[in-house]
Structure formats: C-alpha cells, structure tokens
Length: 252
Image 1 (cartoon, helix red, strand yellow):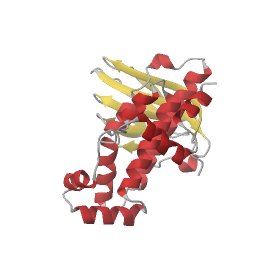
Image 2 (spheres, helix red, strand yellow):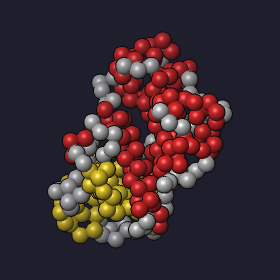
Image 3 (cartoon, rainbow, N blue to C red):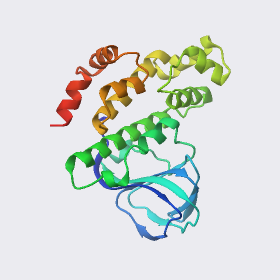
Image 4 (cartoon, rainbow, N blue to C red):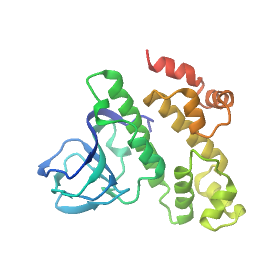
C-alpha cells in the first residue's frame, strides 16, 4: 500500500460556532470526514441517523446521501472533503465513536480555516496532515482485534506520545504485568513496544516538519527527545535524511 492516500483536498474547515445550519440531503462524490471536538451534531447518511458527540468522527463515503440537521447549541468541529487514490485503503466504518485521541485532536486543530487558500503550499500542508491522520486512524482500526488489551496499549501510546512512556507506565494503565504486556504486544503486532513508540514519534515528527512551520527544536522537544542532535540522528536513520534537509526540500 502506498503511504500517500489523499489525492485532492476539496474543502477544509475548522470552526467554533453557536450552531450549524442544515445541509440539505444530496449525494456527494467525495469523502466527508468530520471530527467533533465540542458539542453534538447529527448527520443522516443513507437514511441512517448518527449523532456525533465530543471525540467522535464520521466518515461519509462517495456515493452516499448526506444530510446534516440544524444545531442550535455551541459546537466545534473540523471537516475535510477530499478524494483518494485508492478507496480500498479507506476505513469501512461510517461512525467512529471515541476515535479522537489527544494526539489526533491536536493534529486536526493545528490549522485555522483561513490557512487553506489558493496558495499551493498551504493546501499541501493540510493534505499532508490529513494523510497522516488517516494513517493514524487506520492503524488504530487495524488493531481492532479480539484482544482488547492491544487497543488499550495503542490508545495509551497515542494519547501520551509527547510524554515519557515506559513499559511500566503502560502496564500499570491497563492493569497487566510488564512481562505479559510486552508479550501480547509483540505477538499481536510483530513489534516491541519500544520500537512501536519510537516509530510513532518519528512519523509524527516527519508530518509536523512537512505540515507546519514549527521550529525543528520545538518538534524535537514536543516528541520527547532530550536534545536535537539525538533526534536528528535517529530521524536520519529512519528516513535517510535529516530534519533540516527535509524541511528545506519541502519549502522549495
């Protein structure tokens, strides 16, 4: 599977309103991915009603009949309309309850609605960020196995990715021994917990470099690295380029 999913960004909004207007029922020919950050909002998709609450999301697929009901209470949400290269890699679920982790909430909130303009680079940044969010959610859903502990481990890591995470803190959070936590994670994912955490940190750092103008030292600190030199070293080992070179090439 290609690591890049998003083909074209058609619309993006990040809004905090006293309420929303009704969207008249119509058939859409793109993906509508909406993340609910505050309040509630109801969509009707192909005749079925979905009420989104805080930390829920809805993914409406091309060819769907979409309708949004009038909302009079304060709400905050982020929405993307886009097309993809391959529909087969997209999540099958429409309603994604409690899918918004602390990390995903931070990511979808990075840009204001005014960020997207006719300027190519601004749209590219939002597309890069959306692509990472889709990969992140796909990763979470792919671990939706019979072993609920794996889901709990992944959720804990995602919600604390910018903090120091150890096997001890993870095992304590899910009330399992360190040995058993390590064993079931390696058995289910094929990776050690340490390798998984390091990989996630570097992927997030890469997307922040591509999608934001944050200083590289800030990104390094945000991902919990003690110094920039070490961050740059492990980044180059993972991606065969340094953070500075990646940022420079992306701004040409």
